Each structure stands twice: as structure tokens, then as C-alpha cells.
Length: 584
Ligand code: ADP
Ligand code: MG
Figure 1 (cartoon, protein in one colour):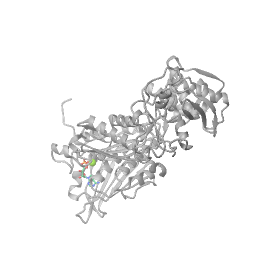
Figure 2 (tube, helix red, strand yellow):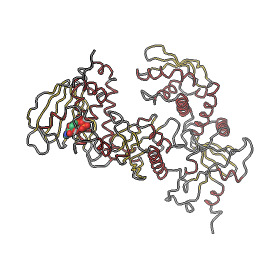
Figure 3 (cartoon, protein in one colour):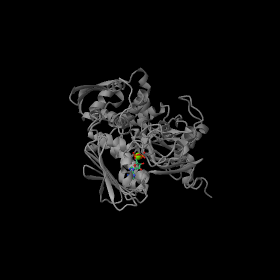
Figure 4 (tube, protein in one colour):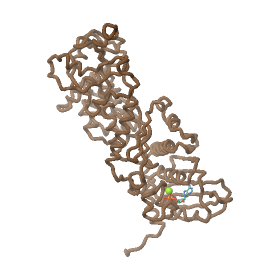
């Protein structure tokens, strides 16, 4: 074949493959255009997961009739003139590709009236063929309707995921932009049903409340910090609110939703030691920096960017979030904020601690007067970068209270132990230790049968080898039916079907974490489920066994999520409280 320049139509279709991968890509490009056009209101309607219709209507500045045909041509943009503009770009678009790409793989109708025209105009592009411009009456702004997406690209159609997944992607996109642009009024319906509707009041917390429940929205901690012209603001969840995967972590850079592993890592580091293994926070961070600090022209969809100084941004994000967390993280209160002190060293197991060590390692509860709660002294400062690891004083069991806590006496006062957190820690360390030589497994007298949804069944199938290494023996014996023959010894007594469900419950569809990380996560999750609950009466032997188990732990003072397993009330505090000390 001789070399030829491809006809524009063919070139557009090839280019479209990069920009318009799936229905959500169309929604994204259209919404971004509306934002660039200065719209105050953006109404989105999607039918059949976008396969049939995607419509975006805005009240932005509109397109003049004389420019409408140009707008759908390839590399036609009003946002950029020369290469240098790329470094000072403030608009979301600039490649001039979206409308041409969408028009080449669908039937696209653009209706628009520009601010300084009395009449609107309309243009239809079908499979790349541009129709004739015709005058229509229209309100100011632009309505773009995209029908029969990929009708001429059967390969793409086949490649689409289930409607549920495509709808979920569109949902995820629209909700994030609604939060990122709180001054715009978003309306969003799928298949005629109104989904999200925002007021444009500018109140991001209000929108968070629409998306999550109101109480979570209230609890989200506000972040706002500026480091050398890098502004990091947004919302992060308190350590008590987590998810089983990273999908609730969102970054916007200069108004664009982006994905960036390094930023994820910075965030996770900021939470270090405060979250259970395998749990992730809910986060919306909006990062603004000078456009010349970030290269957005890395990928046609602009969802990946490159930073001039990634290290500086990494530390800005980490510091901003850490600071926000420490300022707000509630700490267990008795008469004042408790204080964690850094462990001075490991004790020889079995040797009784001397009073001084016990003192320095204990979580002292200070008197309210000497430590006003209002000061933002951070309780985690000392232990944030090292896991809260310390040995455990020998305790004499006194008993159980409220079917939830153990009471014990230690070298320096009273210890209250959270039975659930403590048991979680004991089980977790036991299973993690056993992991090297294979986790002990116990065959069930009667195999448990569990029925799963098709998605769950697929996930379980993928995880069978991991499950085996964790001590589960599971076999498929019908469509979506599984038989559990053996469970990890630690879980014996718990409902085996339940235990298995926890393992698959939190997985994201395309998640492929490292096996060791995956295992630690699963183990933490199994232990949480298998641990005794608050409200469970324990026999004296069980109480003793729990204390003993905790004594044998490497990090007995926290559960696997980093919450304390025990509170120490020193004799000193008791004496003060009873007015024996410090009183005149
Ligand atoms: P880009 O956004 O990269 O410039 P597009 O293909 O998305 O490229 O759009 C081409 C041009 O059409 C834009 O530069 C803009 O001038 C115009 N345009 C597209 N959508 C709208 C809209 N909703 N309102 C006003 N103008 C629009
Ligand atoms: Mg665009």
C-alpha cells in the first residue's frame, strides 16, 4: 500500500478512541466545556447508561452561528492560540478534540445561542458527517445531545462494561464535579429519574450531605493550607469513617479530577497509624497551583498530569492533611485529653516493669486543670510515625463491666480494656504470625453453604488461592453456590458464611493489591468479625485468656486500626480525683 494522509473522518475516529473511551468520557468532555463556557447551570440527562442518549445543557456564553461548524472540526478551539499558552492554561479544555471526536462516533446535535445573538443555531454531526447549519430559536447557552454512541464502532460497544458499571462511572464523575464546583447548579438524571440536584450556593458541605449522609458530611474535617503557593483545601473523613478501598479518595488539581498514585501515598501517610490495615479515608482534596507547575498535556483525557516538583506537592498534601487530622481528631476524654508517650524501649517479656517505665509508657490521663482541652496539643504526635508499639504491664484481672470492658489492676493503677479491640489485636497477631508456616485451619463438622451474587462469585473465584492460604477451604458446587469446608482456626465459633462474606465484601472490581497487603487486609477484616463483641458476657477463664493473649502481643496497646485497646487511670489521678493530693 502506498502512503496516504488519512481522510479527516478516519483520523477523527482514531483520535476519538483516545478521548471517548466510554459514555462517561462524553459526559466529562461536555460538562468541562460547559464549565469553560462560564455556565452557572449545567443539566445532565443520561438514558440507558449513555448508550442511547447523553444530553448536557448549559446557560454559558454559547457559540455564535458563524463558529458552530468550526467548533466540531478537529483541533478547533477557542481556548489556546500558541504552544506557550499551554503553560498558563486556566480552562479545562484546550485540545479542540472533544466535539470532533464525539461527533465521529455518534449522532451529535448541538443547539446553541451565543450571548450576543438573538437567534440560535443547530448542527447535526453523524458519524463524522457534518450536516447543514440551521437557525432555531433557543435560550442562551448550549445544549449538546449525543445519541447512539459508538453506533459505527461495534468493537467499542462490545468493550463497554455492564450498564451498572457505566452508570456508576457517570455517577462518580458528576458527583465529584458537583462538589468541586459548588457555585454551579448541577442537575443530573438517569433514565428520567432525578439524581443529584445542587443549589449552586457554594456550600460544599451541603453537597457532601446530599451524597453521603448528613452526619458524615458534618463530621468531615476541613483542610485548608498553603505551602509556597500550593493551596491544599478540601475535606477528609475522621479516622472513624473509612472505606474498604481507595475509591472514595478524590483529588482535583486546578479544577480537574485527576488520578495520581503519589498523591494517594501522601494521603495514606498522613493517616499513618490511625487507620486499620486495608481501610481508607473518604477524601476530597482540591489542589491549586500555578499552571506552569503542572503539565496537563500528558494524556488525551487529562486525567493524569505531571508536576514540576512532585516532592514539594507530596509533602504539602501530607502536611496539610496531617495537620487537619491532628487538630480535630477526637481523643478519649475522661477529665482531660489522654497523653500517649513514646515507648522508651521494649521490655524483656516476663520481666516486671519498674515504676518509672510503667509511668512513661502508660497513657496518662491528666487532670483537666493542668491540661486544658482547648489547646490543640496533638495526642498522636509522638507516635504518628512509628506504630504505637509498646509492651504491656502484667495485669491482675478484676472482672468485666457492661459486658464490654475488662477491668484490671496494673503496676500503677487501674486499666480498662476494650474487649473487642483487645481480642481483635490478639487474633490479628496470631494469624499474622501463623502466616509464615500456614495459617491453622479447622475443618467444619458440617460444611456451610453460601450463595453469592454473580459479581461476588466472580470475586471469590479470583481470591480462592488467597483464601486457601488464609485457612479457608472453599469449593464451588453450583452457579454462585459455594461450600465452606474449613475456616481459619481463629474464626472457629463464628458463622463461617459470615466470615467468608467479610472477606469478599469490601472488594473493588478491578482491584489488584499486592498479595501481602491483600492478605494483611483480609486478616484484619476476618479478625474484626471473629473478635468478641461489646455486649458479649465472657466467662472468667475467657477474660483471663484475653488478658494473657494481649500480654503476648507485640503491639498490645492498639487494635489493628490504631484505636486504643486500653485506658489507664493512674493511682495518681485517682488520688487527685478523691482530693487526696493537690488539694489544700
Ligand atoms: P476544547 O474544549 O478543547 O476547546 P472542544 O472540542 O471540546 O475543544 O470544543 C471546541 C470549542 O467549541 C471550544 O473551544 C468552545 O469554543 C466551543 N464549545 C464547546 N462546547 C461549548 C459550550 N458548551 N458552550 C460554549 N462553547 C462551547
Ligand atoms: Mg472541550
